[in-house]
Length: 159
Image 1: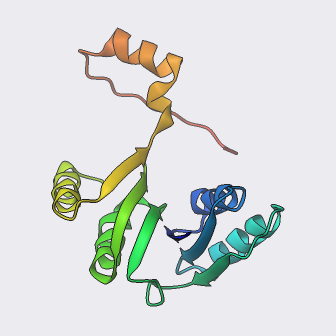
Image 2 (image 1 turned 90 degrees about the vertical axis):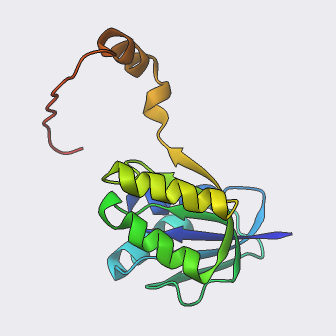
C-alpha cells in the first residue's frame, strides 16, 4: 500500500519532514506544496541529498490543485499567521486521516477551538509537533513558575 502524504510548507521544517519520509521504509506518494519557488527548490535539494529511492511518487507544486481526494497524512509546516486559511483550503479539497501541525499552532484560542471542532466532526486525528514541553529543563521551569505570570524576552542571532 502506498501512503498519500501532503506537506504544506516546504521551508526549513517541511523540507526536513520530506527527508525523514524518504528515509522511511514505507511506499508513498508525496505532494509538496509551497508558493515559494525558492522553498520548493531547497526541499528538492534536501530530498535528493538523502539516499534510498524506491518506486515512489514525488511532486512539487505552488498550490493544492493537484492533490488526491484521499490523503493519509498531511503535514502543515507553515507559519501560524496563515495556517488556519491554508488548512481549511486543504480540507475543502480532500479527505485526510491524520494531520501534523507545527507549533505555534494558531495565533488565538478561537482558531484553535474552531479547528479542534472541525477535526472532531471529520474524524481527523491530529498532533502538534512541540517536543520541548517534554524536555527536563522545560518541565523544571513549568514546575517552578506554574502559578506565575512571566514576561520573558529572548534575544540572539545566527540561530
